[in-house]
Image (cartoon, rainbow, N blue to C red; front, side, top):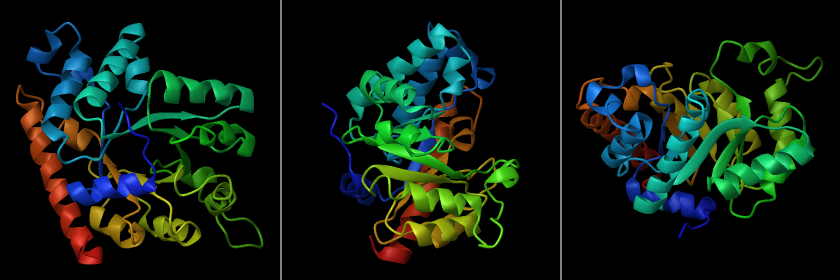
Length: 281
């Protein structure tokens, strides 16, 4: 049985594990060792080994759906089996579908049904550009979360997100976060802020002091965990920090899972220190 997870439950898991680590399950088959490639379902076998090796250090897993869609129907099957495995072995883990959906209200309802009811994810990343009616269907699912894109780590973020409105001095992403914060609550709405934008984390935290932030970009993309914590931690942690390639592809040998475990352990230790330093959690 999967328990619905609100902010209190999520914070309790963070406290128990002394970790706010989210691991991105973004498998690149070109980096798989031969002993995985030779199995009937390499993606599932890879994910299973990663989960077995890292679950004690992670409070969340976040499959980026593109890595499964790119493999066709077999990729969807691998994703379904991965979700089922995590739910069976580690039902306390928070599962995020990194699918970046968002469309007209009627279509968003179908997306919400797909990811929350059929696949059983706890949360879904959502693009807010089409406004409240495109986001509302995700927020209407009890015990589920919409994670809205606010500021991303890619170079193109400066094209729209980090532009200032004439006469106000506010960035476009601040307008988005301020408006969206009235659509949901701190129990069903998070915001994505790239780890390479720590100063923007502070600006978002000023608008939504009690909400969780999903922060991708530490590791390969160059984000700094200490800087993220400095700008983003609140009294109940309020952060899920994601690392994908730096953990799951830390090594490409047959012992890739052991390398992933070591990398996840290192990050968890730093997170534990940061939590104790700031909050004595």
